[in-house]
Image (cartoon, rainbow, N blue to C red; front, side, top):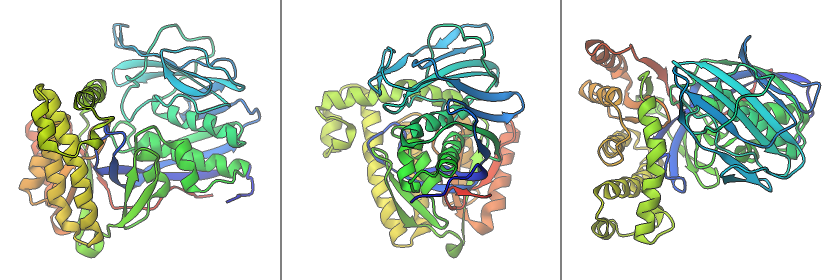
Length: 442
């Protein structure tokens, strides 16, 4: 699809909830849906093709120039200590561990310094025109803890929130299709640190904006690989979502098929609860679960845990109780996704609640990625009559709840009371009705 170029415009992309699917199972499926809350950008073509700038407040800006090919970020606590270190580079346009100077034409450097949530983050991100930039980006949380390395920032560092970095990476990836520079202002009604897909929504809106600004011949499906982070279904949900339908996303390539999920017709409501917590649990899981799953797969003699066909036999062959728990969750979660897809095809939407409950218990007990506020949210919701509840995807602190519409307010009240009695910050609630994909507004 070829869209006539336009000098400026306004675009909006939705956030998402993950109904089922483990984020650390990068080769599996995920059941997701787009939600009404999202991210809006107003964008114009930049005067220079090397300028890529995003701002979400007057002092919050990500800028690039054309000088470097490294990906660097320093994450420091209040005392100035670096608490996470990782170096990601690429060679010949392919991301690789261990840094290294990439070859290629266009070279870009993103400077970002973020102060907030009690910590300081500095990031420098880069890419080439010969291939995708490294995909290790700021996640759906308060700080880009997944990437850190050495070196002070160069002069010209701009102030920015790290959740905007995925959008900058999208701009670099789309250069190979003819996109140039962009200047954008960002507005969001979706908390960037809530685990509801705000960074991916911004990336999706940016992909649409660049397509329209430069007349790129790409439809929404073709834009998904440019906007997506490897193994995550978020960008697909934002770019391909359909009102009244859920998406079954293949994490390997980002392809998606839609399934009926018209909740209103069944008298049901889907809520997303921002527990305003869970970042520590997300960081811990990100640091350890992929390695544990890889170790289990190696001991079982399979490329990944998706190849396990006899779960009982696999569990017997593993002596490490931690690895047994991880394998049990990943394998049974895949079975739950298949069961859920069948329920949605049959229109048995209310029965999805039992599958959500089973998934949450497995996340809590087998994969150990839940946290106290999530557990309390699920418990209060179920006691108040919800059909089912589960962590809504991550990293971040959201829980998704399926309930009869008539009970929705009762459930909100029960959760709020549970938090108040524990002296926790009051949770916030979001409508998670399956919604339409990203679109141009103006």
